[in-house]
Image (cartoon, rainbow, N blue to C red; front, side, top):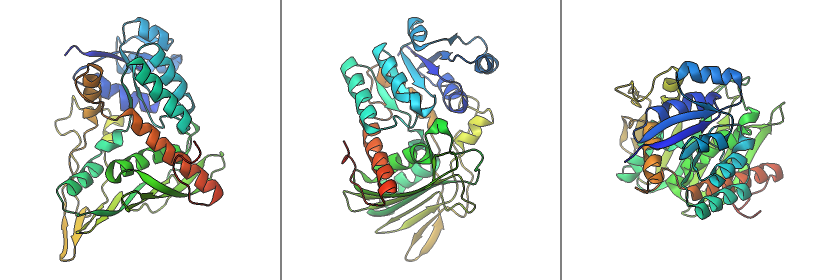
Length: 343
């Protein structure tokens, strides 16, 4: 397969640390350049990737021969840039939140289908070590039928978030939390949510309860002001429960300058006695699966070449957007909301 020529729009935290190193090290991808108007970020591109091209616009990137682009810019620009890239004939990876509302998400998905390009939301957290471990325990029957999924992105760093670039905690953390719940337990029938508005006008300390069509429930938390973070995941089924305290460390590795190309143990997590499976007879430690963010871009490249499905289907972004919008409405009205009711 000829490598897919892929560029990157934005070189902030996400572009620099999440996307650029994973694109640069991905089999099947040729990293052709970054679109940024910032002189400071152009200097960072030159420092991190000597000789890599920088472009003033998406149009210039497309004219250089790029076939695809990854969008890692402030949340409010995602839909506009995604649609512009599609109009230029580029396949697109769009970071979360994919769109600020369901209507914008649907429009982008429809444009991509009509244009015949590949569109994939960047839901890299599907390949976290903790979530892959839960999926493995579900697939092999260890947990039985899942009845409750509890998932948290909680930390105490009030000065760092929620940032305007992420659109608030519900759209930022919530995009991953909801996507994981949908992957594990399927469609949602009702949503109840609570949130607190910070001094910057953005929501934080978010709680979302989902009732799935299967009858299972998901309880999801996201916060930048939680002194005592709960376990990353607790999942209960008819046969067992699993508690995972160890959070995935691929983000930390990337920020520290590592990449899959330079690490022999990429995604491996140290064993912890706090990660355990519980049954009526007692408990036992569980080894975490290898985190696999490094599989996203190679899979995307194959999809662009028509050699399989994208790592995340475009339609999944619409399902997530519907649930997030229902959560927003629920937090405002203090009522339970059906996803898609406002469409």
